[in-house]
Image (cartoon, rainbow, N blue to C red):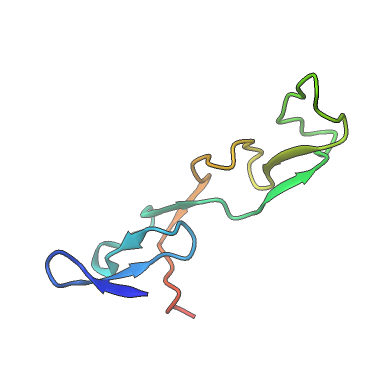
Length: 88
């Protein structure tokens, strides 16, 4: 998906962070994203990133598999270049 920017430049949609960006200003820290999925399963016993609430089952938690963040809206844990849907 491309659309004209304010100055007539083409902007693209990043498939990692879902933000519009200008290819001319894309650099190695432009995109912030999670490289893994938000999952619902038991954490590895050696890595307890979460606190169970009083009504939570003792066997499952929801978190990003890459960094352990429990908020699905958490800011990405990795930065890199934006990647367009056209870049395949």
